[in-house]
Length: 541
Image (cartoon, rainbow, N blue to C red; front, side):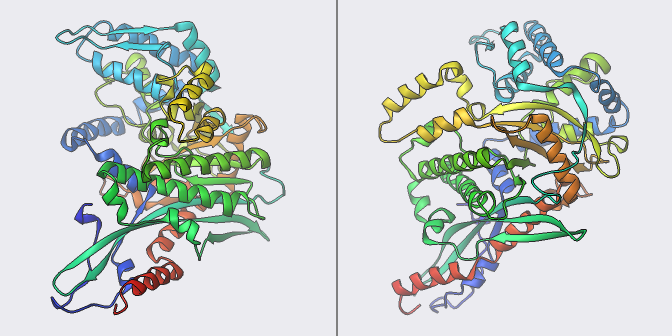
């Protein structure tokens, strides 16, 4: 564990036995949000100089073109069929890649990113053959008819960009109840001085909290929701003790505590929002709906990382099963977006039809960055959010997140799982295979910002057979945003003398702030439990 993740506060004489001051420990610790943890995972194996300069060059180019090239792209994409656009993208990429120019490798990687990682295509639809050792020739094989069918099933919307109107009502009553949740991670170290030496024992505590928004007597009302007294069973998943670092390799440890955040938030969503007597009509969950550790091989690990991966899968399955029955809209609000399924198409379209100097392939902004530039425009946003411009809807399945579309025959998943189960009989993979059949989301961006200085989140909502059409749910999400309003999240400013903020639903920001506060000042009952156990082990402490 890096020393920078712990701030040590104990100051004493070398041989003085210090009192155990839990509150001081809490105040000296570091609180991380979901995005902070995710970013640290992505930082490993990373060339910061190359990536930073490439990002700066590309970001400046795109931002300078916001009122010219980007504006022209906005207007034209309002008229174009997205399925035809994606199909043309794949065909054009195939032609360019097989010319084996200097960008062939980068373009092949982009096709993989869009088709396989983003849209969930299998290798039978898009197959890329890299050059053999010492050779330079790339080859890409496309099953055009199958790709056309896949796009028809996974992309909804007449146009790539389309106007979307808020619905007249949301939920069961005249005044909708909108919920939100977030999770924070509290990393700290307990000072344990002894006669001849001192040491700091690290621990991690996860905490989830939420908020409800309603309108009463014409006035907006926020209600904070959190658990003030976590049980021993809940602490098993909230509190990561030092033994985890002894058992796990560093990367496994980081993945484990990332999964612990998912477990805590899923449990909170289910027990305090979805099953609540005051059940929200719509829940804005900070972060993606899918867990951070989604691979089947990690589900069957015989380690604490495997324990948390399995628990996250089980808890998400419980959430989706319940909302499937009661009809609550379960929507993730993702700020730390990694996909480039929209942005790559915009880059390609600009180079192909607007500006040949645009140069696709060198560096492609992620969807969040690119859609904030594309959709942010004063003319795109009505003052009351009654109508805005959104992207087309893209269906993404848990099987894609789990990378099963590259490993299994998606038309016969049961056979794949039966074979896998026979090889891992110590673990019941039924929850995992059920989630693969059930968990499908639609993702999209809403242009509810007038300036790209305010970054847009990606909205992704679960859709089951008993729900209304995806378009109606997208309208319900806009209605919820319009009802509760928008707030700036200033915690994620990046690379700017002027803060780059995320513009997110106000109830989500309320949950975010509450989660941080509760995480920073950990519940007194939890502190008392640790203190009591410590004193029972060290009577003179």
